[in-house]
Length: 613
Image (tube, rainbow, N blue to C red; front, side, top):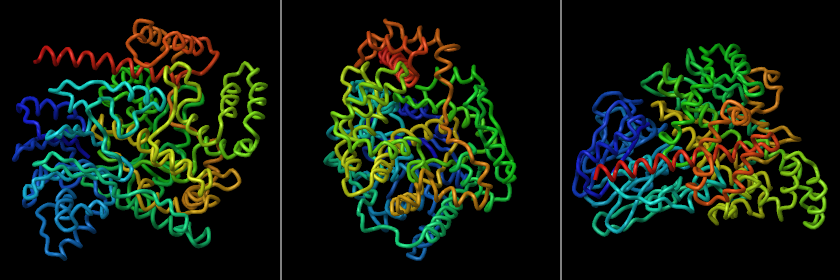
């Protein structure tokens, strides 16, 4: 888990050092860069496997040079196969295995890797760069390409140093809708994200960049699981056990994030079966309705883990709010980033690697919205005119939740309703409030051959999991030099989940059915007889009380004028709607606060660069 950088542009060494120093928190153990024939490669290392300096990067293997961020969990199996083919190794790292696999399998090497990764190999014989990003976008990869020039990094601000990049206002629009910037866009016009599950080649002679997809979800309905529910449970149990096992290997202390929910409890239970003493970590809020720590402590006590409960101190939360743009680098408005950062900060005091339960909801139909959509889908058999008539009556209610329902049933079809639900139902404050994603993604959602719940699950895996969840966890953990690993995001488990009949995952309102049944073999079912809770902070209350002045100061009319793409008058109205308790507008206010902070910091950077120049 590290930070990578490279460029065909020849910067002065002090500029390259500044680019690496910008993300020192991603890899504080060692930092270095080297110039080769027309290419500079740089690396910040967080040492996890083979702590010896021999595995520092940029790393050389024959005529190859590599910079790599992430982990290849099955690298030892790949290494054994390569040794049979007469490859030799001088380290015990996964970095060296990537190079040997590239020599043996070429660009298909990525299909052999089970892990989270973003890497670039410089092949001095072919005079080309080859790189890839993992299947679900766990690890970030940004690049800028223009003619002969190619520059890449783990975070976009690195590319901005020493250059004069421009803000992409279409990306700001996307952010105002989705609360993150969907790939391949970035906040800068000149910078893009390499899409998840894609690799690239860059020819140093011609300057030609070729991007290729090497993996995707299987949308073929013929490739479905054949067997009983018990068969599926046994197979999934084996997969999960192995996925946890291979993520428990590290040369540094390791633990588990334990919220007390289904997914993290299952990961913890499987970890306890394989490691003698497991450390677990949860977070505690003082506000009523937000504190789930008691449930985590109950599971931890039953499993016999060494448990740590971290209290979310209000003042510390405010400090992280004011520094969120430093670590996230782009506007990013999932407010659970704040407790994720706080959890990572204190977890790092005890371990360097933490396993999490991410991806369980997307793959096994766990979100509240899945159940709600399943409940209302029959309503969409009613003609639109009839639904609009019903909506008119519902809209007479003063309650904002009822008004949202009225908006929802007035949408032409249930697929577009789901997209609106993810992208904020009420966007009257955004000037161009159209909601949509890349055509390929919308085709996934509109696939007529699959059941509704499977389509929205596919859609979330391809979009929300990548753009929101993985961005959140990567930046939150890396902000404090902590590696986060997600067993449920093992591509074998995701593929298996997509092959299962819907009723194995969602049955008579029982969400994540198969995961729960596996968990209940390790932890009593009555521990989980409660509604599902999200990982959130009490922004709704804070914005009306402790943070009211903060909101008014940072979102004054003069500040709002600096934010492109919004209707200032309507924006002021929604802020007041929230402060007076008429409507919960905390998600919109949080988006505005984060964006305003990022834009202010960006202006400061531009001034500093102008002075520096």
